[in-house]
Length: 493
Image 1 (cartoon, helix red, strand yellow):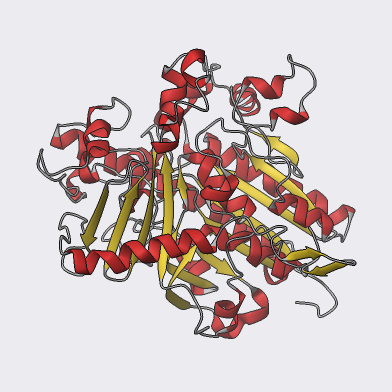
Image 2 (tube, rainbow, N blue to C red; image 1 turned 180 degrees about the vertical axis):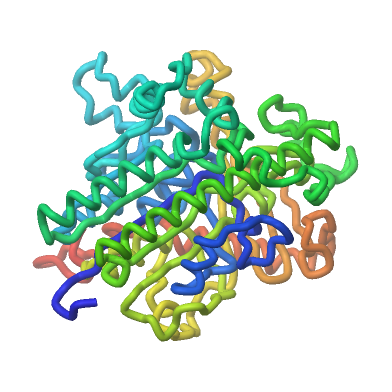
């Protein structure tokens, strides 16, 4: 890499990608050669976690570097406060051109909208402020559907139908192939037009459901290969949130064993298909001479249950919903390539890491910290000793309730109790619910989250640690500033 040049940045999100579905992570049959290659030429973070689910909240943490307790995006459709900084705005301040291929799922702050007919108010699939959406794929998936027609296919009636029928078309005509191709086209033109640094965000849908892998990837894995999921605790031993999820038509896993095996095989196929598309991107970066001038980050907004605990999709408290892949390649630290970090890292660390890479200060709003010490081979003694995540399900009540229910504020605060927070360390996981109930799991004895710790003397320190985490991560944007005959302390953002 040239000494006089700042690195370009590629930020890849693979929606709903759980951490254990990597060949390099030891999966017994899933093949991911291109992600494995990135790990061999970068640093893999083995204990990397998303901070929230579903997509909107998880991405809000990723893009702002903030815990959900601070950014308050609690559902798909909760507006992202326009006062917050984010990775695209930071890139612009650093002199980068931030471009998007895909989606960001960030609903517009309605306080910035003056026209009630503004189309941004019609969907939660808004574009994160700061990005130039070169190829936005939101709502009806129109650009991809138009391209499918150009390839000779009958036009699907909707984006959902197009996803569900991906096994019926060649893998080269998938949504992932389309997005990757448009990103490569942009890189080729960019190489000719300007030498200005850029941040390219490639936001892939897959392996997000529907469980329908593209083309030959739909038959790549035999369902009989798949392992059985973690069974849920018996009735009467589960938290009532878990019980309610097991009754939810979108969250409950199929009862049929063969259907679960098929579902898992399709998910594995989607993983391998999107991995193949990333191989195309790595090759393009090499051919264009940018492979050694580009920082690459690959992660996910959240994980996927795949039948574990009787669930599919994401949400609740359990680990498969939040343990995600995390790989960073910084060409400036090639001597550390191929290393694996076992410290707890989080998606809130991504924005600070990219700010560091782009040469600008980390905003005071960020709860995360740069991963740069690990990329350099350092072992910071002050690093966190646990991962944290949150889940809030008030959106279901808002969607199902009436305006009168919501308007009962400030007397009715039921919505404020529909959430949980988790602190997961090397040996246990403590879960605290907004209604005051709690659970504590012994992960040293049973990593499947099915064995509880019940001794109050053992639980108290874990509850205290979660409380300390929350108190240490309150909004600090102005808390470090004092006005007294001038401005003292941290300058305001």
